[in-house]
Amino acid sequence: MAMITTVQGHIQKNISEASGTFGWLMSGITLATKMIEAKIRAAGLSDIYGAFGQQNVQGEQQQKLDVFANQALMNCLGTRESVAALVSEEDEQPVMFDRSLDTGKYIIVFDPLDGSSNIDVNVNVGTIFSVHKRLTWGSLEESVLQPGLKQVAAGYVLYGPSTVLVYTTGDGVHSFTLDPTIGAFVLSEENMKMPAKGPYYSVNDSSVATWPAGYAEYVQAMRDDGYSARYIGSLVADFHRTLLKGGVFLYPPNKHKAGGKLRLLYEANPLSFIAEQAGGKASSGTGRIMDIKPTQIHQRTPFIVGSKHEMELFEKAMTA
Ligand code: AHG
Ligand code: MN
Ligand code: MN
Image (tube, rainbow, N blue to C red; front, side):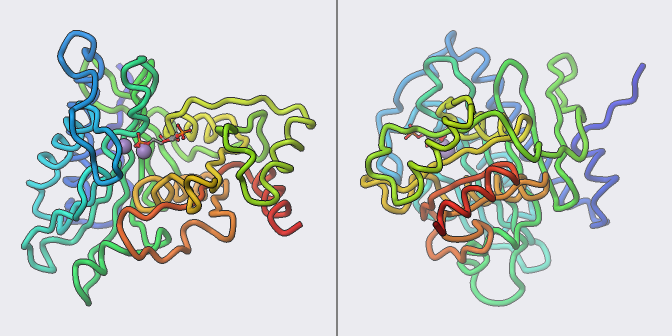
């Protein structure tokens, strides 16, 4: 029987922090995402499809699965002593816990369910998470608004034909596949590298007429260069394909969203950490995503992420 490595086993082996606190934290994430996966698998059989009937802080119609996923993560993580605060796309304010500096050491930021518009048509959706260390100075609010380069861990779960968890703690990118027969995420690949060049560009070009200078020319040059277009509309799925196959994903600013649509804290930052660890790059159009100092938890950013080759061409297109 082949030896298996679970997420907890991988963390024990690779994370120097002896207290096991971080491993315990990650077990909250794996537990919650297994609960979400179970709900998604049987979504058609239970009353989990459709709108929840309320809007979230983003003014978006919450789907029932958004609410379930958020509650699963809140319940599984809130009980972990090492969590000082939780930030969710679905909640206007962070959930702060009254824990001492040496107990509540981590801040977890997450998009509980990414790609909500795809839930009811049975297309891949995901969960994205980002972990920061609580600052030993200043307020908890300051700990929540740290730049992406301060992340101690980041990852996502992609609920698709198989359920895959991809994460980094700054020492390479590793993927795990949920083995439904034992209900555990099992190591499937270590030290994943994004191809230096890829065959795809990925963008919703319905707003091409309102993109800032340079974007349309950049995308047209790829069309002329024989790239294929792939756009799933679930960021986690579009990102995962870019990580495995290479190429570029773009969500440019447009006239409806001058600052871009995707959120810095729980979409762009975690995926940028993974992209950079895998040899790719991530840009806001004017700079490196992970250098951005956040000013509020739901702030948005233009998000362009992908292989070295396509990103260097993008940076040139932005300065042309
Ligand atoms: P969420 O479901 O968490 O709100 O995220 C949706 C995002 C992201 O998943 C995807 O890349 C993007 O919305 C798609 O936006 P468009 O439909 O405007 O292309
Ligand atoms: Mn999202
Ligand atoms: Mn979401």
